[in-house]
Length: 123
Image (cartoon, rainbow, N blue to C red; front, side, top):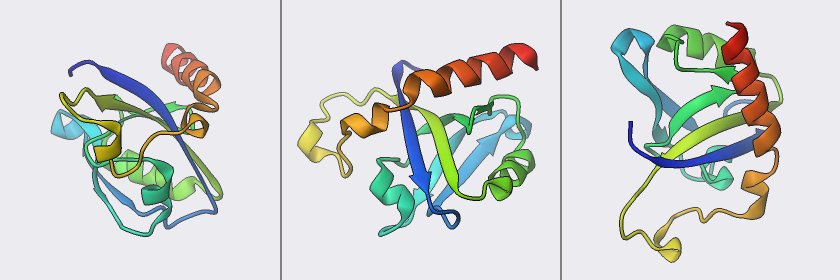
């Protein structure tokens, strides 16, 4: 796992969210965003392919298998918050990014990070 930035991604309105995940504990791979559908909630949220999912609605993902992640995603009704880690990309300029970050992507970051860390300590 390399260095990168932690970003809070928020989506509302319920599924479908418009992205596909890959990885999981049983695959010994970090949970990552594999695909984002164009014109979807995910595409408008700033989520990017390759982002590592740290937590979903405050639930840490590092020790979850892929089926557990799917079960968690299916339980979400209206609001999805994901703490993601975006790995450093050398020589990537902001105007080259398909979904530039805006201040609302950082909104809620502190509370989501605190919830994620608290859930990790308790589990």
